[in-house]
Image (cartoon, rainbow, N blue to C red; front, side):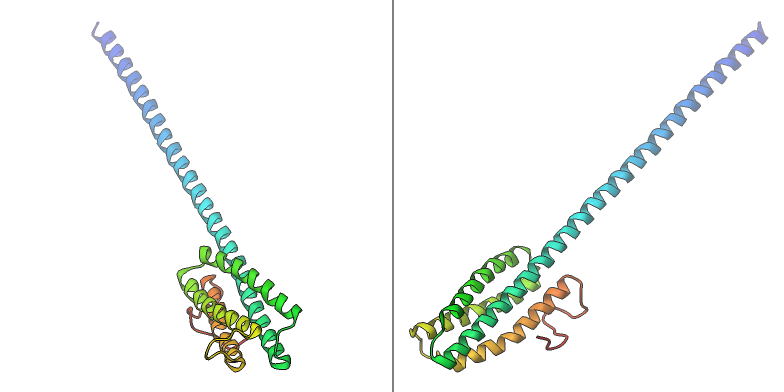
Amino acid sequence: MGAAMLTLAAAVIGGAVSLVSVLLAQRHAQRVHRREQERVERHRQEDLTRAREDRLLAERQAVYVRFNAASRSVRDALAACAADLRRTGGVDGPCRDTLHESWRAYVAHHAEVNILASDEVHGLAGRVNGALQKMHRHAVRLDTGATDPGDGLDVLEGQIEELWERLVALREGMRQDLGMTMTRPGETTGERR
């Protein structure tokens, strides 16, 4: 009976070891599977975050391009109005229409910049906006004859010329924000117009 008990005990112990071994292997496989699922989910979240950041960057770039173009269009329209005022003492209809159209487009694009621009670019855009608003009101007053003290064509032309520095700073700030240049916002790489 001793040998039979020993054989039975060995079989029970062997079965228990096999069962524990299977359970440990299954637990290990579950941990590996869970880690793999976590890794896959982490990569999926990283991909979603990267895609969102890329989409926002592309959207910001498009807004910056539109705002830069609109700012320059208003500046060009103001310069054309100043030239008309210098030449004829008034602004002709097509020039006035161009100024109003470019101003409406500018206001819409400025609203986009207010939403999507970085703080640095927002500040630069605000300075450009303030200057353009002042010049726009000035040009309208000169055109209608309802001028304020200190209004004059020479003043308007000086403001238009001074705007270039702000437009260059704005463009460089936008480029910096988009990672397209090494200069800091507010610094300029040149006086390209």
